[in-house]
Figure 1 (cartoon, rainbow, N blue to C red):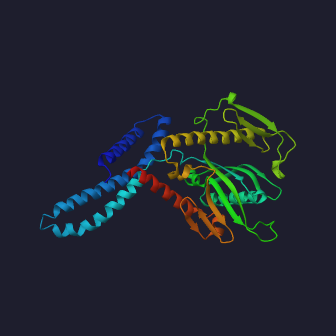
Figure 2 (spheres, helix red, strand yellow; figure 1 turned 120 degrees about the vertical axis):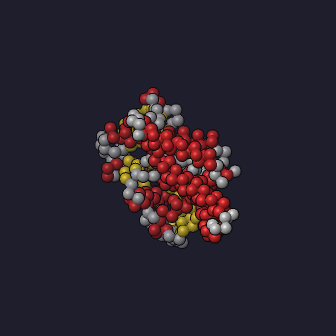
Figure 3 (cartoon, one colour; figure 1 turned 30 degrees about the horizontal axis):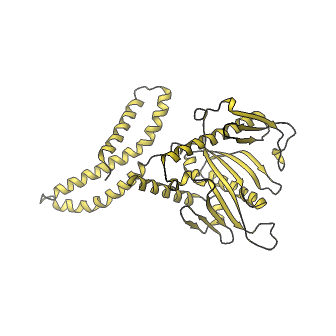
Length: 351
């Protein structure tokens, strides 16, 4: 059973927030308090329903000693006894610690790994897969940087995704995605294996990450690439080097001013994520249970085209629906990863 004093503490906190919001708090305080109030509102409803069910069960048990009420009590008790464990389980999930970054927009970075041109083509397939999924969720999918090779494959892509619960869902996509298929350039029909890497970072604001100008070097250069908007005749492309870490970010759109904005946006996200990983490592000795913050060098998924199969190795999930998945149908995968992550966290709280 969940300790009732813990539930009472959460309810009191919610009541305090409710009173504070109606007492004329400052604009900045309202913004902060409203977020916590919104997060707790549904939890407090579940707490109230759970406590009512416990109270009803206690009353029913007391009614057993009354001959006039015994039949009614015996009728109510089985339903309450089966309902309460389910309510408790749902409440335990609701009380799991939330990732503060879950509600943030995300920066996605996609790059080819091993496999040459085929890896770049696969990186392009992943880019389109994520774009279709984001569109199906009603999210804004804005390509910040796109470098392609002569075959139309992706050498590097940076994307900004904005919408409700973006990072909470996309964070599980970080890692190495492996593909097994017959490349278009393969004359003998042999299956090749190649890979692409995906990094999903929570968007960081200037208040999250302070980057002194003395810590960066900004270089301008002429954009280069396979053609189109990524080649120009002026020095508008921007490369920012973060001197303390050696991290390099580039952007090569037409506007030098916009390129600086994009590069700083990506750099802030990378540094913010670096700090999150450091804190997570300190908090948890067992990183393996943290699906959403795993090592990005880890192979997380295999897309086998000859068999029409997708396997997520972290949770041993295999789906024979590869064409639908590549068309952006990622809901079942993400829901399964979320459930597995929650179950692992729930097990940690019970030990």
